[in-house]
Length: 479
Image 1 (cartoon, rainbow, N blue to C red):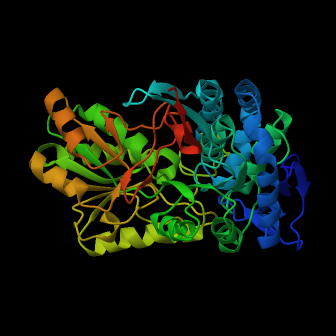
Image 2: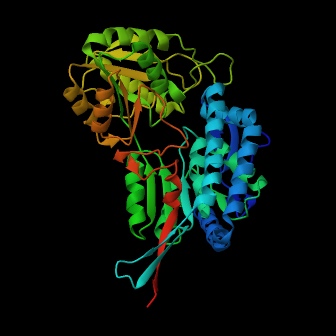
């Protein structure tokens, strides 16, 4: 921990908050304080914005190959320091060390992917319909960006936003979640080491998000917001962006359906359920929230899932052999406890888990519920914990209707051996992504994002850089 920066990163320099404020970073496995980091206020936000604005013009003129090489060097540094970054992430966020190593690899891949996209930004040329004019199209960076990242994937959510911004030629102010600032500060140090010019990336760690972010969004100099977080906060930020028409991309909440048909391979379905539910202790927007299982196989599926969930080892993420770490904080655990209690009160049966352990840390056991009432609160709430709620269905039309009966539409999972049904149901689901006979959809090469109240725009894939670029059209008369 001693090598990790704890100050703000403004204009290429590590500085204390203007008012000297600091905030603690807790270990969710023990409740102990890992470190104190600078707690930025409005003055610090203005300094970060000023640094980004001042650096924008020169950075936009930087050769695409130079931007590409910076990202490539940063990718290589991240890979070289996988173990140190994974331990840092586990310490501040709680996920088991093996998962943290997986996230480091995932995070690094965004830098490698966008290092390749940086040199593929193109435009166009064409003859306009009147035949007397030509059209010249060019792409240019949208300008200074505000990037707001969540705590559940503290390294990967940073690289998923920073990578395309750098590749496109945008400068940035990054505000990480207050629970997990250390991974973002370590990432800033890596980018500085990789040769990123001063002012291109500025990091403000803060417990005062409203005081820091709202003036930037309303001030007129930030031209792009990229946010990952809850739908409730996303709505608030959209309203703040309206005054100056800030371009936005948002990856918001999810309420993912996991549909198992009667012809599904149950081994594959249970394997997929373990990934879709238990990745990151269930603290993921892509986590399967509502398990709809055909009545003819529901009992067997639930029993198999309960056996697998019950065999998982719960404990501090840094300990050997641990499969499930703590939830992020006491509030997160209390929410899960309340959702399970409400479901049980409405008739749900607990197959495994469901009881909070004694002792320090924010632990909650992997839990499987059956006979869940559709009126249970957890059916309409993003659980963000290791709880699988199993419901039954009888026919395709019914399950599609129930799966779509939510304001969210990020991801859905479908398990069936029938090709026609697989394609038909995938197309009918109102989601931005579908896991077809798989519980994992995230990949840097694929466009990530949702529909309805799950967000705007896409991250990753070939379209990921589009969110940070504008078109300019030049009319060229030829006679």
